[in-house]
Image 1 (cartoon, chains in turn brown, blue):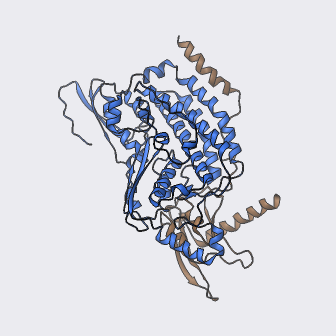
Image 2: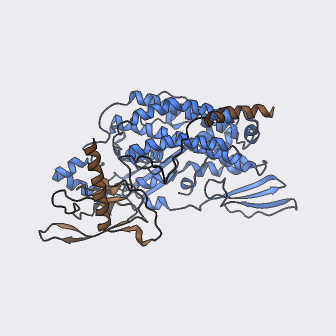
Image 3: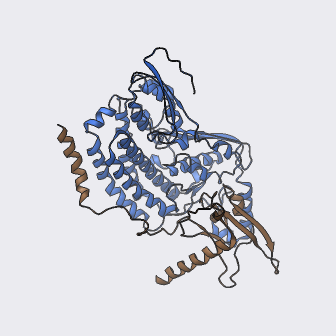
Length: 149
Length: 398
C-alpha cells in the first residue's frame, strides 16, 4: 500500500531527473534582461550639445509616490534651466517608473543596471553626476545593440 | 481581538503561535487555548504589517496610488492594479470607454496573476504539510509567468502596469507567442500536481474533514473567493457581477460541497485550469487597436502629444500636479481576486485626491473566520487551515 503512493510520486519526479536543469547559476551565468526592465535610473544628455536634457519642471519630483527625488534648479547663461542638484534616494525608491512616464523631455529613463546592493546608506543617494554616467553607459550600450541589428 | 483567556482546569493551556512562524505566511500571531492537543478557542491577532495605505490614499492623486495597490496582495499585484483601476473608472464614469485591446490585456494579466497566486498557494500549502517536491515544481511554472510579466512591464513583483483608462504600454513583441506556449504546457503541469497530491494518503489525512465551515457560516462571515466555493456556494464576481470582457468569455465556476481543506484545494486546482481556458480564448480574441483612452480629461496624454503640442503639455502638468478631478460622489467596486473579493470604496468630494478610500481585503475577512474552522481540531491542523485560506498579510493589514 505504501509503495503505491511512493511509486506514483516517483513516476513524476524521476522523469525530471533526466531533463535539463531549469535554474540559472547566477553570478557566473546571467539571464538576458528584458528591454523594458525597470532598474537604476539614468539621466540623458542631448546628443549634439552633450547638455543635460532635464529642464527642471519638477514633474518627476511631484509624481514620485515615495518622494525620493530631490531637485534644486539653476539658471544657465542662456536663461534655460537645468538642475544644480538632482538626487535620487534609492533607499526610498520603489521603482514604479512613474517619473519616466511623466517626463515631458525624455530626460530620465531606466537603465539595465540591476545590481544595486551596498554597504552604506549614503551610497544609495545617487547624484546628478552618477546618474549621467549611468545614462552615457546605457545609451552607448543601446546604440551598440542597434548597430548590431 | 486580543481576548484574555482564562484557563479553567489544569488540562488547558494557552499557546502563542507566531508572529514569527514559518508557516503563518507572514506575521500572524495566533493565540490558541488548548485542551490537551484539541483547540478549544482561538484568536488571530493581526496588524503587524500595518502601513496605513488607506490614509496614504487620501494624500495622493489617483494615478499616484497605483504603485501602492501592488503592495496589497503582492502575489497577485496585477489583479490589485486591475481592481483599483476599475474602481476609479467606475467613479469617473468611463468604464465603457476603455479600448477593447486594453480590456483584453488586463484580463490576460489578471488571469496570469490568478495562476501565479494559486501556484504560490499550492507550493506553500504543500510545503507546510510536508510535500517538498510540489513547492519546487510550482515555482518553476511561476517563474515562467514572472518572465512574461517582466517582458510586458519591466518588473517581477510590483508591476504598476494597469492604468486608469487602459494599460501603460502595449504588449511587447513575442509576448503572445510565449503565452501560447505557456497555455499549451500548463494543463500537463497541473496534472502532475494532481498525481503528486490528490490521491496521496498523507495529503488526504491532513486535509479531508479539516477546517469545516458550513455553507451558512461561510455566508455569515462574508468569506469570498475559492473558500466560499469550497463550501458549496456558487458565487463568482466574474460571472455574477460581470466586469471588463468576462461576459464574452466562456468559463466554468468550480464548486465543491464538503466545506473542508481538501475541497478548497480542489476548487483552486480547477480554477487554474479555468484561468488557462480564459487565456486560450483571450489569445484568439484579442483585437488590435489603442491600449489607452484618448482625449479624456482623466488620463495622461501620450508622450508624443506632450512633446509636440503646447496645450497638451499644459494639460499634462495640471493632471500630474493637481491630479484628475473626479466628480463628487462615492462608489464601490469589487473584483474577483485570487484570494476573494477585493473591493475599493472611494469617496470623492471633487478634488484631485480621494476624501476617503476603504479597501475591502479578502484576506482579512477570510482570516476572521478561522476560529470557526479550527474549533475542535488538533493543533497541527492550524497549519493546513492557514494554508487552505491562502491569505497574504500585505493585504490583510494594508
